[in-house]
Length: 606
Ligand code: ADP
Ligand code: MG
Picture 1 (tube, rainbow, N blue to C red):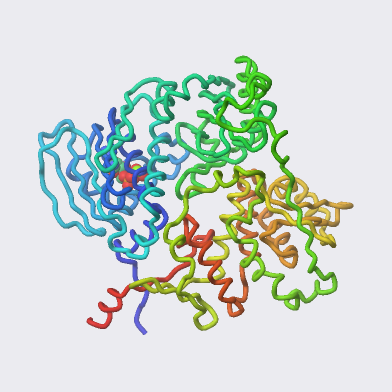
Picture 2: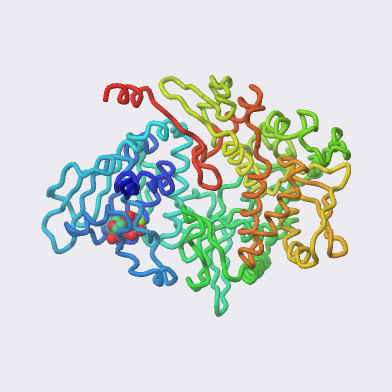
């Protein structure tokens, strides 16, 4: 037999990479705006049509690209920003993988024109689905204009999964705001369907926050400033009266890069503890400067999560910086909450039900069936999970009448209209789902993993965990070393809905578990946690949470799809289509295989 291994053609490789980099129109916005800033622009314009589905254009007055660089820019792993892996540690520019443009061009129709200061003309390229279709010269000022049209035009299944214009434009606005807040020294404009949404002139940080958040924010802003040898923190927090039930005005920037960080968020929330009632989210705009060598930005493909070498130190500093500035500016609870209901949110919890953790007793639990978990009634394992617990509204305990307003704005019209999916089990292994001219085959276990993962991520995000108390505690034996390593992570486990105790350094006893898992999966989960701890050595809490959630979603996901009932299939699809990432499992595997009528015709006609 001859050799059979071949390299993937570039455009195929780029399409695969695009799955990671380009999740939705807002990902394109982020990459293009960051490129404009990296190019030294003073003014950046974002022009969007139909929530980015038709057009995303970024125009900058940065240094531009030469004719050759323009070609190179669309090659995979082409970057002017690092030369070797070592440079990764000293990185101060935003993008660094040299992947964005190649990936974007693989899944859209791109027109890019760029002119450098030493050239009289601009050079342009037109690339369709990764293939160069035209190049030439055109007249245009120094800088770069990047037009990205008809995103996912060549991947109908991905285009189909884009959400409503309202949802997609919200994501784009989020990205725009993050970039604009990080760079008050630059001018920005943002147009959507001919309307100007933002016109931000260069200024200082306070002016920029007010420009982005609106004038009403101005009177609430309190500066924060703290500096040590290794870390500098600066920025603003908003007084408690600006706090909301809904999240959305929380911004951390580390070395000027927007990040999400549960642990740091927690530090801020803790510092506000005495001045803010439970369930409210303080608004903050905080910039943390650390030595780039002490962070790892590369743990997540979209680069909004990072880990610090020394989480605890940053946590402590942040919390003291905020307390300090709350004190200095006389922010006291009496001042802000006893006045009555003049603010746009209800005041103290006294006229509202106090938050009580939801505890369910598992009445079906039969201690004698522990050795044969399969024998348990059908309503026990994952089927029950999918029928009851994964209903979006039930999964997080609701605290009060306002919880509706707190719901994700990310609703999916696709799912709303079609409660009854035309779906069934295929060959006992996949879910076959038909929608117009597309058929989808869905991998049930991965889909379920995605749903559980999102659910748990949402609950730590909101600090509300659905936990069930076990009637009979589950006792697992441990070696003393394992007991020792687990101890450190008990608080993190608690934050996910576990109620567990280490006893005599040789047992872990579970009294309660998150509602999304079953007690029969506990031994597997503990084993996974221990092997993670061994493999990674030390983990910070964010890393640990992510790992744990990955493990939980794997252990709790449906194992025997052949038993899926119709109702479970409907629930699974409903939940899956509400996800922001319905196509990719938390472990990066494909969930959906699709076939369009056109592809079918092409097949039979070739
Ligand atoms: P990265 O930003 O990670 O280097 P990209 O694929 O986003 O990768 O961009 C590739 C290269 O193209 C960049 O390194 C830069 O040299 C060039 N480039 C991209 N956008 C611009 C722009 N707006 N102005 C000037 N050069 C740009
Ligand atoms: Mg880039």
